[in-house]
Image 1: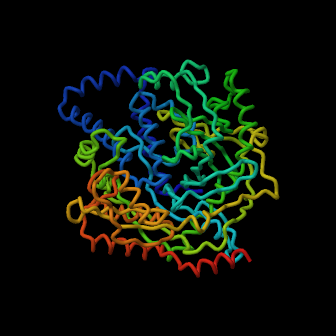
Image 2 (image 1 turned 120 degrees about the horizontal axis):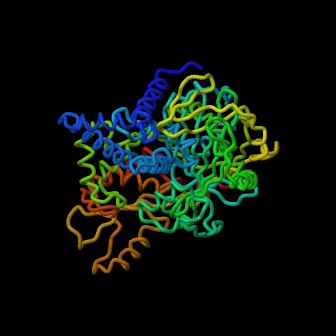
Image 3 (image 1 turned 90 degrees about the vertical axis):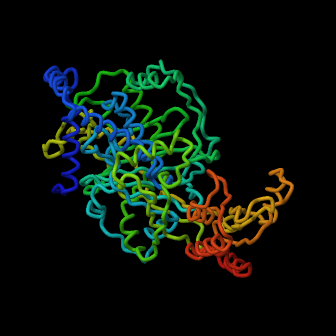
Length: 571
């Protein structure tokens, strides 16, 4: 297919990046460039240009750490971006991790500084069951999949609304789904999926940085940061200790519906453990096999481990229908405004965050430091009538005619048609052996999507206050028990002489989610950090709570209506 203007622009940015980064010590023009740099350095204008470029690179790296809506998928995309840029800043930009094979499609170089940034993003929130219902409905005719289904070089950032969505995978145990991201680069779709697995299924292990399995460049990075041992204890899934994170990456060709590469990444405290069928790790850029005794062991591990996760990829392949789902539900989506850290200024992971924000604002124009991000949100149904769905795998085949070899960022290669392209090259190679690494699902295989139990989704949003506090100081939160019981617990644990008193409460569906939206709306009135106390007039707080409950359609049905629904479902 012909390159779009956006794809051409992106290739040009990588080309400019390659020219800037390509003059290394082994380049024939290296000494001449050093001499030229020394001569130009006598110019105040040149010195200012270098200083401004360095400041811009640092500001962009900080901006993209802070400018997301803090939803699961954008959190992980920004973690990947930070890792890649850290390597650039430490002089190891050409030694990117295996994830770069797929996540490269989500990033591009800034055209003025040696730093990577994310492509334009579209943010969505919905209940995953709504999407599954859509693509499995006999009332919906799914359109043929093509590259034009997706906007070019635009990230579709999908996040689950409310609690994690439980997914039952055959022979794999309990799983939850947090969200996913998709981006089309020409005819290829890169997909990131964020899942959680039960913590008891994770085995702790420790790996010394002198272990031969770690690449020299990675060992050097650990030394730079003073890390002597890589800690492989399970990381919590976005703060939830019941699950550990499991990330899945894949890239498919939308023209042929073929799988190019798959990665499974288990996140530990100190690193990712990666299993992949990426052929490029076995060959150099000319297609010659690498002479490395570890390769056969890596292949054997991939052949043994990846088939266990094939249902994850079956699930992710269905994201090819996400744009059609958005179009069909267009009138049902509404816009939520999520504050970024440029509005909150309270991220505990960033030292001196206010000073960092000031530097970013002084260096970059406002497009890089939005106070809010618009998130298109599809409200969950008021009552869940169906609590499980089955999803059959799509007909996908393996790409066996060749593979993309990711090159150092300062190198250029060729695409499938022989056109020059920076940072990667297409290697024509017969890869029939890859069909054995990730075996296709059986024809009868399916994925079950299980909703949260109906009764567990109800709770209360409350407004409380203590007579010991000043005027207009209220605690606004949620509980799955009665608000009075929650008030008694809080009073007993606070050590205050006067108890917290419930001023008003509302029974709602998905109380935690309603609370999160209320807190975002009232953020300007929050007294400190992440605490739930607000300095706001009661009428403002009450109206905000009721407006949000109505907007989210979150009012809990009456008890009698609930019993009727349960009886109907059981029948």
